[in-house]
Length: 340
Image (cartoon, rainbow, N blue to C red; front, side):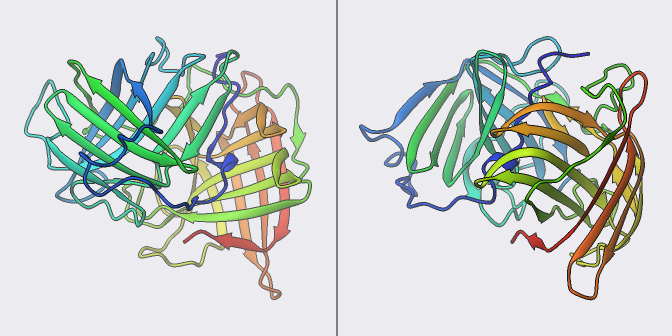
């Protein structure tokens, strides 16, 4: 079992897109450089190139700027910072030594995947503490410029401006050819030691639309059902990543979904890890906004029904990825908030 992966802190911690008055100017040469700006030097640039997998005619560059990079298992290193950028630019013509195309990239709160933009949906500021625990923050506003190996990121988070500088040789891995997320066949992330019935406490739910993220032609949604105490994550939370039988943002999410690592209609995506980021479907145990336990769902079913009152009922019957698999069951009924 990997120890350093046990303490994920997902985007739930921040909860929704933050808004603030950004100090970043539209001109990178004028913005992000004031006396109050925190300047960070990135020693590492890691990432992947996905070609047109997420937007026809546009290249997707998934990158991390950090001080210490990743360890040999592609996991975060303690006491480190990472700025993750989900960037869309011109299609690369290189077969090896792939780099980010030169230009100025704008922060896209609409996640349009247009050329020379980077998405608000997946771009994050990530930090780790002494124990490897992870904290994530969303960007309020940002700019990203590339001129050869010279890369500058200007970002505002909670009214604090950052300027991240990078100027070294680098190259991106080529993940264009049917690269699926890892399925954990040889690695086990669950901390459960027995069957478990999820206990929600003062829970609410947020539904996020991800378009055709899994590139199978159907609507992809994620639902977070979160236990909270004083508006802080505390207790059981589940992340469910499912693909409906519709396309074009049809908000009918009802039906029975089967867990699989192969994307398709009426599939609940298996829990896995990509660059230390949990993707797919998971259980998390929070204590005062820090994750102390988790389980990746690898088989089972999810049933979603809409009630006459307008509420939804979610019934999960799944198994984790432990060597001796544990059964995880959950049931929740309530109103859901659909993120814009």
